[in-house]
Image (cartoon, rainbow over all chains, first blue to last red; front, side, top):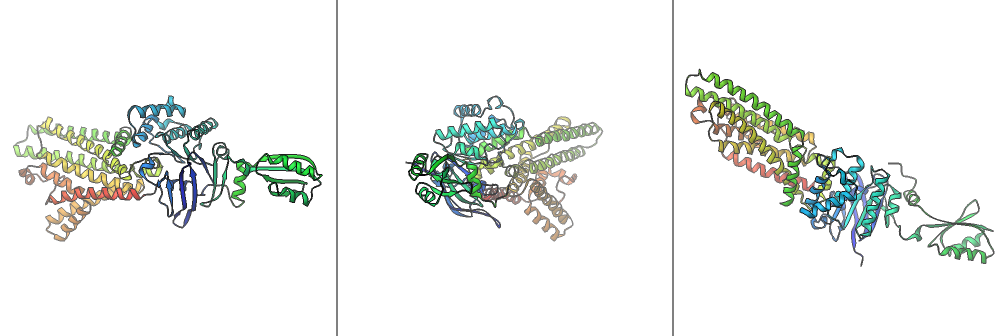
Length: 306
Length: 277
């Protein structure tokens, strides 16, 4: 049975007169890679901080790994990479990981072996004994990612994990998230990079002005398949008939007809139905709606670049 | 306890590589060099000195001057070393990755307190040892009651270090530095007001000075330490501007200083535990 790893109800945070998060209710299941999307200032980072007990909620409730937020035993099973990962820059990456490992109560050979494995995984093994102050931004971000995984967590919060990374670094992070997903680790991912979210997440939530405005499954393709047809003659009968086979049927001024269907299997049924009604089908295009398009649709026109 | 030691260990490891520690050590070397040279010349001139009492008074005066400087440098170090220990990590965001670990916020404060406390205590000990070794090896002079005086000086710097740590849970780094030094300023002026009031027999002035010392007790620890370092005969024979010229604080003030450290530390833990990061 799938376990709920994160559950919030009407979580709210107000800073003075500014409402950063208003009534956040969400549920993340074990093993999910959950994308948390929204423009700058939507309250994503504040939400993560509340789930990690770094910020006290003004209202609402939340449970993480089955315990109230902030529970110490639960925190031992959580990893976290903050948006702007900062560090004790006089330390080497190995010392940094040793410090964070010790805060998790890890010691000795196990800890050292884990540090070597993680340094290798984030491709920093050759730089592990150099001070962090000499690292590039991308190297620091990868060291931060290794820090988030030092305790082999069941739940990882990654806040903009690819910020500052070059394309190779991004691929590496994407691979690591895929590995975490394969191992059953739950990942809560805050990111602006929609392509990255699309490639790694099972499910996403769009956040606007501190509230979830839409949730979307990325593994369930049905919600995202758009079909466009060129049919003659195009009349009311066609539109009404296709409404039985899909949703949001509309005709365009160019004489095309668009609808959303539940799966690819419906497309031959559509064509058969049209032919049986004596219509000529000149073209059929099916296309999945990209996450970027979803983002623009959901956020609406009132958003300005952050 | 385990987390406290890990944080303290990190504080010590960081200190080894921080410029403030190097700068403080260079200052200590410079001050000790000047002091040792002064003692050397004084010892050479001393050959022509006349009485034993005068000789003792001279070296007592010099020793108190050296210890006063050791105390003053340690006071500055105690305020400035931990000034960004918490506030800097809160401002930079470093604290976020530490605070989400399975540790109590109190452990973080106590770890920082322990680590910084060890460094400040070591610094004071090095300076005091340097001063004492100089006068002893060059002039064969040793002040009395060191086992009473050194703990009082350690208590003074611990108190200031604790105030600096506590300030870091609430203020930004620069503000915290100003508050820490201002706190010592109250102690310093309070001590002098108390003594001047006592000497002039102005009871209200003296009481005001005592009240200032209660608000900020560090300087009274130095005055008590300096009092103990002087043999009773020399206390009256050689009045030094570096020691108490009037009445000395009572031993109750020591207990108040200890309580002050504990209360300030509890305040730091409480404030940091509620602080949003």
